[in-house]
Image (cartoon, rainbow over all chains, first blue to last red; front, side, top):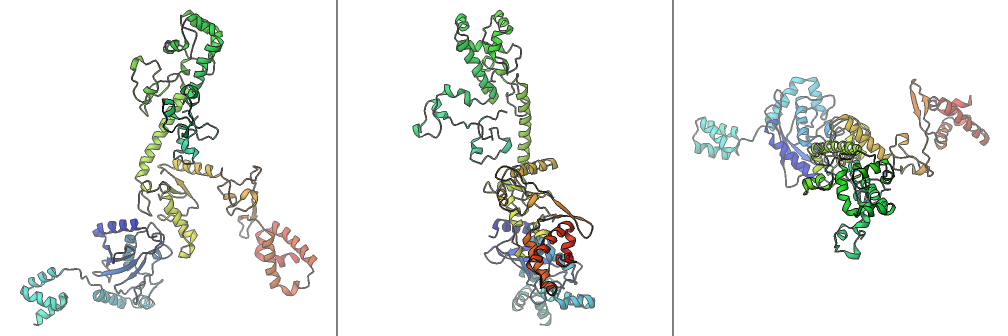
Amino acid sequence: MLDLSRVQKELVDCNRDKSSGVSIDLVGDQLSHLAGTISGPIGTPYEGGVFRIDIRLPDGYPFEPPKMQFVTKVWHPNISSQNGAICLDILKDQWSPALTLKTALLSLQALLSAPEPDDPQDAVVAQQYLRDYPTFLGTARYWTEAFARRVSIGTEEKVQKLVEMGFPEALVRTTLENAGGDENMALEKLCSG
Amino acid sequence: MPKRVLCKFFAHGACLKGEHCEFSHDWKDQANNVCTFYQKGVCSYGSRCRYDHVKASRVQAPISSSSASVSYVHQASNPIQVSHPSRIASSGKTTLVSSIPVELSALSRPFFPPDKPSWFQDSGDYAISENDRGVHSISVAPSDQPICAFAAAGKCPYGERCPHIHGDLCSTCGKHCLHPYRPDEREEHIKMCQKNKERLEALRHSQEIECSVCLDRVLSKPTPAERKFGLLSECDHPFCISCIRNWRNNSPTSGMDVNSALRACPICRKVSYYVIPSVIWYSTKEEKQEIVNSYKAKLSSIDCRYFDFGSGTCPFGTSCFYKHAFRDGRLEEVVLRHLGAEDGNTVIAKDIRLSDFLSRLRLTFISTQEIYAIWSAGNMLYSLHYLCLRNFSLGDETRNRGCGIYTIE
């Protein structure tokens, strides 16, 4: 049986600490299915990105490792660019029940800043990392820009931002609505029209 | 502290106090099975009561909590009433009446060794001198008198007028429970009191400790069976016994290596080969050692179910914590055979069985079929015997090179 009290404690503990750059949310009403988010470490091509991770807790948790997978696409030698599968020893045979979801997510963050191309999950990425590092950096940065952009800013903030640029508020609101909440697209439309 | 009455909880196999219990954990001691309600007058269970219905006077001796006070009852009442009736008659008082002044005056008397019965004193010089001083001959050594139970419990309603001795104050427990004339008992009480205090402090400290696996406080778990720590032999990280056992019993199919992952501490990954259950967490190395030793001592008194009085084999061999004894009580004697391995180190040989030989022998036979195909049964037996000898003397070397070929040259 899944140890519910431990999972609850972990959730409370993790979400209380805002400074760590990781957070865990419930997906449905089941404690066995969670979603984690980690922010890309500074000084890496993943900087500025927010990565979502699907977490499924097996019945044996914490005696069995949680199953984690990247939902956000990411260009990294140890993470599959196709399905987001992660190659990390502590999520497999080096798991220990003293590790928590938070520490596992922090380990993923550390994995983003220190890739292990010699033990790859995605061979294509690993080859690029080893043979053509500048291209790897570019691709990784592009993927972060394209898939892991921070979308957490609320509509009001976006409106305020655009109003500050000198556009009338009513126009900003309608344009933003038409653009589906995309700040950049709305700005383009405002500038062109 | 006297340990005469059998502990009720121990009798049911559920005493949590262990060696710190103030009642006896020795099956030879009698359980106190006397109904206190009946003694006070009314037991509502009547004849259906589980406890013995005995009158107070009859049970005075067996239920008194102190061993010394038992002898007091015998010494004080029997000799006077039976062997010296004349003396009591001449004094004109009954023993009951005289007992109070005697006990009071006993405070001012010199100390007697408690093992000296009072009737010897009666016949000796001392008894005469007592008579000279005008005190009645019923002399009870102060060490034989019990101290006032009320004072020991906290407050005596009689205060100064109390006919019993008031004990000295024990600085540890704050009660007047130190007998002024029994040095041994005093010392024992002080020692016990300090031990109890230390234990209480350790228990308080243990309350705070959390298990790193379930993240709960170990001693706040719902069931008593779960409120135990699991100590690892090689490191000092606290877990509750169920969590650490669950982790170590994790099935090898989960992909984790038994030796490097499961037997390792979840926190520091140091490998420990056994877990010690304990109701208390330790703060020093000595305390841990004490817990480990008492656990091992307890297990070594239990017969190993794998060894099964010699009819089974225990996979743990000489490292087994349980008792390996035969039905007649004889302990198993194991002589370890040290063999020189190929790399020059010494290894301990495991039991070599005939079945192992045969299976190995057959393998060799298959590989060297051409050579041995025509061997007769007699030859085979002879070679087997020879093999045994060679293998015992050469050990691993023989085994590593493949026994068959090596012996026939």
